[in-house]
Amino acid sequence: VEWCLRIGQMGHRVVVSAKSLIWHLSAAAKVSTWVLYYDNRNVLDLLVVHKVRPELIRNVRRLIYKKAVYYHLIGKPDLARLHHRAIEDFDAGRMGKRNIKVTTVYRSNDKISEVLANPQFNRILIAWTVNVHATRIQEALVQAKLQRPELSIIFMPLPGGAPIHQVPHSQFSAPLPLQRWKRWWQYWKMRGHYDLVIQSDYQPIIGLSWLKAHLLFINDEGFCLRESPKLGDVWKAFKLWWRNR
Image (cartoon, rainbow, N blue to C red; front, top):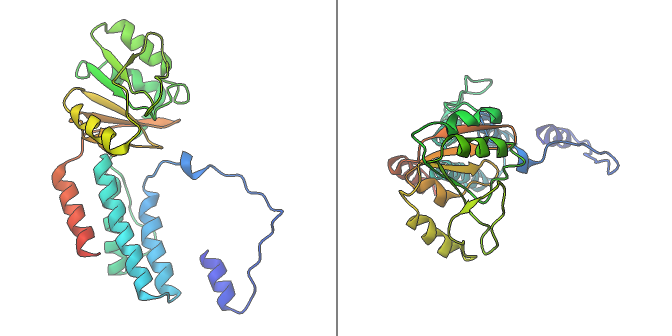
């Protein structure tokens, strides 16, 4: 995008070939990591360098602060901090490659059996957005149940739909209503009933991150274990966004 803007400013035409095909991973199948820092910092630099309207830059800054609130809400505070650091470094003129690290490490999905064997987790809830076949954890779930008879693994049915049997003898939570506000009420009633909530990295649900349980985010390649979000962190991020509205 930045190259095209420069080429246009030099008086040349920017054209596109409709016959060109580029195959790449869908955005829906990408898991956000340290690249968030560069995405947010560099877009601000692009807007300033190419002298866009100041109100547009303010809108983008507000959006970055808003995204930080979202990541705190779902329980990924390290990614939220990347958004804040992006703005801080841009304001300070710190550009180029930075020493960016995230605190949470992803592990291969074939290691999830170690988590399922942890006696700290006796009641596990699996969100309706998780596909155990695609993530290749079906066998690990079955083996965990066989090795730990006291372990309860509860699946959530689709909102307003029938339960999907992903493992033999699946247990299900109460039916989920179609109306979003009713689902939020149901999530609230589930607080404190589970030790671990397994969520999809591709479609996290804010309400499930606040069940007073550990969180396990999983995608087709790996998973990470996180603590439940902290209200204080959310409040600080919210105040930053509010001040910059």
